[in-house]
Length: 450
Image 1 (spheres, helix red, strand yellow):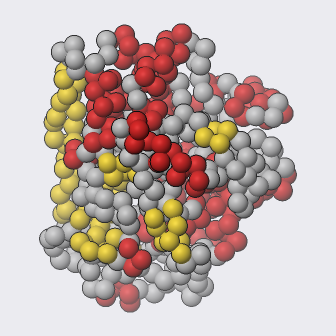
Image 2: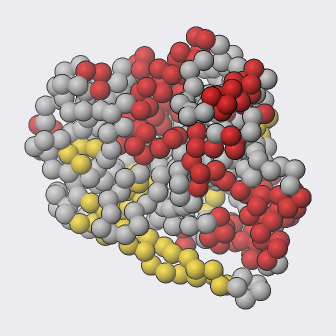
Image 3: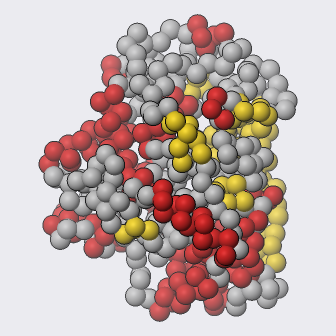
């Protein structure tokens, strides 16, 4: 079996022992914490491992400008980064810039104008399209830059403690194709990509059942209805910050065309906005699509089979107390602790029916004005966001070497993330704010164990 590289043969032996035992989840994550998001699900045979590692190559591949570059030729004409891994480092979370002089390296800005685009999607900006691409191929101006600065805010807890918060301010500088007046925009950090095959296996009937049960508990989760380019139909969305992608393959292909400017069978044409003459005139690879069907299938398999990391410290009394408080505060209504999957529709042998613990309902929720981006996405409003999965959240500081959370990375701690909840999350936030200090510490300890 091919594994991520370790310096210690003891760590390799520990991981092999876990696989032989039949479950990565039985391994001790603290033995290889920096790679905790990088392992395949247990039970892959040799043929499946080959596909997984072929997909990993595509995920790590650095793309170059055509016509040279071999299999990696096709970057641009407009793009943000040169590889998937550049934003999703170690398959984990991105982060925003610390200030306006720092470039966005694992963050981007979605754009649109009021009104509906094709099939109800956001309507692209006529000069900049659906996303600000800061970089351009030779002869093609990058679209400009989004400069992030931070404004101070605060929250007061029931015991009088004051928690410092921050919110981002986005200023567009060096715009190459005219002003962005009237544009709707939404800054987004790159999300973690492990466990997606399991989330794809959650039956839509389960999502609709949870949505039907939630009003009795004071929240109103809804399913986003999005366009599936493969089937040509409107279907439930489940991936992306607003659940705006229907399946993992389409989400991957959207990232290739939007972030790298690389065409695939799902999106075979470059996405140059109507006013971008240099983009349309740029010479690109004559071999379309630039990422062919087989390689797209490989990276789809890779992403689908990245295992969520196992829990840690589950036997700790403080963690157990925190879990009780988490549920009593109402957090588990949206961050549903466990879901039953069906066998994956494409990978039934490698992703069979099972019970998973993602701490999400995959539904959209109104999170209040403080978190609103004001940018609708299919049936998602400007105040709605998909419930973020919490599995693996405690390992973000180790794997990605930062602790920044929420869709724009504004939260510097788990506590800050909780205190930004509004709208349907207001009651749960209030319950947390009313806890005693040791109770809040226990709840945070529980989240760090995930």
